[in-house]
Image (cartoon, rainbow, N blue to C red; front, side):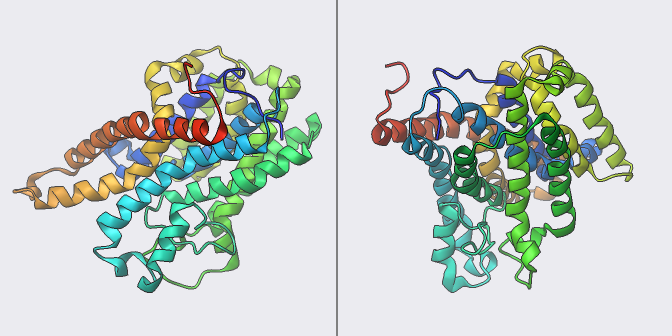
Length: 369
């Protein structure tokens, strides 16, 4: 596997900002804080697919070029990136919500410890060995990310497929369409919650992982197109604003019931490709300090959103005159607390622990040394 040092590989800041947009989109879709604008933020399911695509592109961008550093560095970096916060949030969720009422969060309370272990290490959405249950429901996609990191990307790194420009163009159409169809036909939200036991088909059980694989491969294909610097990249590099308008148009049609908002997936690969050129109004917005910060916080935002929402709902129920608190006040306070906690989580837990693991077990020099 080829890897590159972060110090030798420049960050595409616009894509970090885009990750922040995806995280905020998920939260706004779940929290419903914007009143009459809420229909415009029902694309939060597609935002998860955007995460998968960004992972496919970013891992390829960082690890498939320049100086080789070895397999150990790659896997250690992925563990440091994902597992510490996953374990922490799963443990807090278990102590705060599951232990007091295990029957509400597990189809079989006797398996609660096995559930905890699977969810903490991120294998609960994996085919065969996973069980599909997720207490902290958004964490289903983190488990899929783990599958992509540990199985799919190493395979890509070993095989190093180099599709032609024609195959790239076909794949950038076929892969998003496949992901859309998997989501619309087979993805069942009841399967990934702990509250709804039932009989699910093999397609329902495989849908989360297959959806992630299609998106991740699309991100890899975008990387191949970026590396080729061919006609498609040359055509799209200054088109990020036009692509953004197309996304808004699809969302507009979705608010009118004309089309599913999930079809914005068709625009995500070309948007990622366009954002690799650091020019344009969209890039300037995504490169801004606020959006870049949201991108850095995105993992914390994503994993803390449900625990914070559930905790504050309990708090508001215990306050006097709670019936007089409008929903938008509750949701706005929840969003504010989420952002504050996510910033604290990133600065004082996520980033330091990641650095410690890489330094302690990988032999890397700490930043600034």
